[in-house]
Length: 117
Image (cartoon, rainbow, N blue to C red):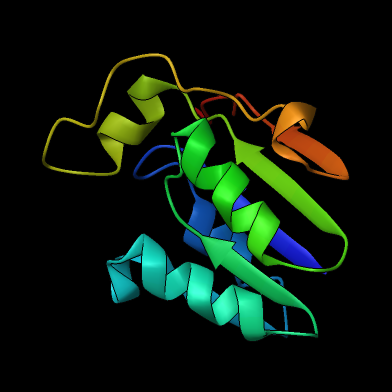
């Protein structure tokens, strides 16, 4: 199964991806949609892709490259929480949330997180 974990920078995608014991591709380490799609298209087992993937077109291309079931996990972490996690201001705009029109078998939305006091 393909699992895409998407959301803004500092949302917690990489932390969440550590739950998986299969091949995990962190987009930041690859820096090319074409390279990620190429690996996904060759994979026949479980694979996780961790990246922002705000663009529905990019998500649809990734989904189309995989020939099995696919789940998209959208981590919706509030701006204030993401801001606390970095010294640089993160993007503060609406995320293009995943839709079933992109070809996903399942979409899971996580968040928004509550701030711990």
